Image 1: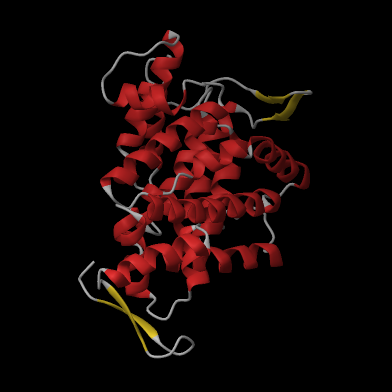
Image 2: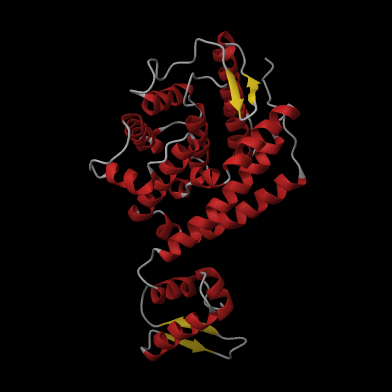
Length: 322
């Protein structure tokens, strides 16, 4: 049996980005308990919902989405509120979705487009063109080929031994190219890439790549169009890996800033990096060296921290458990 293989090229840029992402994920692993906290998961989910909906023209924003999550009433059109509620419902099942099962993707679409489409969770039964500011940029495959194409795509996703970072990006692009639903394709494509990444590394439950895509929305669509013109997903893979890298870095910084206070942040970092310099601590916490010096002087005065050995070859010793 011949398995379908989506066309793409592994460029040096892709290889370098995978290496950088792997390095950042090592940092995430070291701080995982501070990233996957209930508070940061909630913040991440709100950013994700706001980001993926803004790309589709829903600008209720993080504050109103937070209010809806808390069961409060907000000002907005019926359509805007329904889209938020449905997206919340779709992402609520995030950790239960099986990335290689098409029925789970259909269930995600049913949740995402419930009360929005007449046929949520079902492939389109009409032919469609995908538009941009200049008009129709891409005529999607005929509707009667959608089940076959989606079956081939899921078969490749299940059987490919390619790196999950590449598989998730290729799937995302090919999904948008097939455009299997009458509406909601962008939202589901972004969601499913995150699902694939989550099943590779659990911290992706709290890494909102959708909000970074929103920040680079034009480049997102440009990468899709460039891939379609080149008849391979290489430009889109490169774009998404950059987005993932930026998302991870942003999440690590957010986790640090969301901790109790700067003093505890310093102690937590030094616990894993006892030989760190003032500059390294400042760069990690995104603070000035002067601010770090001031906080560490206080910690030393309180006898919670002391320097052992010389300034150049010594290390920091924490006096109490962090």
